[in-house]
Image (cartoon, rainbow, N blue to C red; front, top):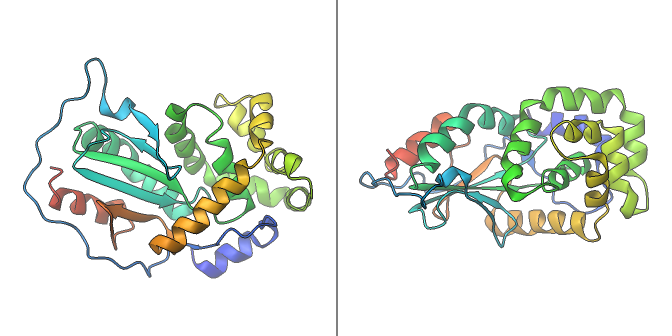
Length: 252
C-alpha cells in the first residue's frame, strides 16, 4: 500500500495528537545489511520452559519474546494498521517463533509505531492483557486486518465522531466501540469492562504515542515494518529477505 493510499484511507481517523505518522512499507530504509558469522549453537531454555514462552516488556515499551541474552537480537517496528506488517506476521510468525526464538539464538522484540488514531487504540488494546498475550493479540489483529478496516469504513461517521471527542478519558473507548474493536477483543479474552478501564488509563495513550514518535525520529524508522538486528537497521522488510539475514548472522 502506498503512502498516498494510506492517507486517503485513514484521512478521517487522525487522533488530535502529534503522532509522527509514517508510511507503511516505505522503501527508504537504509542500513549495512546482514551480519556475517558462523552457525551459533542452540542455547537451552530454563528447565520446564521454552524460550518462546518467555515474554518481557522492555524499557522502550517493546515486548520481547525469547532469551534475553540471545546473541542475535531482532527488533521490529510495526503498525497494527499496516498490511505489509500483516503479511510479515502471516509468513514469519510460526517459523520465527518455533525455529529461531525457540533455539535461544534469536530474541524477537516487537515495538509499535503508531500511524493514526485507530492504530493507537489497537496498540493500547493489545497491552490490556498480560504480557504473554501481546503477541497473540497482535497476530489476531493482523490476521483479521481486512475485516477490521472494512468495519471501520462502514462505520466511518461514528469513528470520526469518536476521534473528535475532547475527553481523552472516554475517547479511546468510543473509538473501540465505533470501530467494532471492543467486540473483537472481547472474543479474544479482553472483556468489555477490562478494555474500558484500560483505554481510560491516564497517560496511557500519550505514552505510547510519544515513545513511537521519539524512537522513530531517533532511529530513523520512516516506515513499517522496519527491522534492527543487533542494533543495525536492515534494508529487508519481508520475511523472504529477513530470514537469510538471520541465517547469515548465525541462526541456522
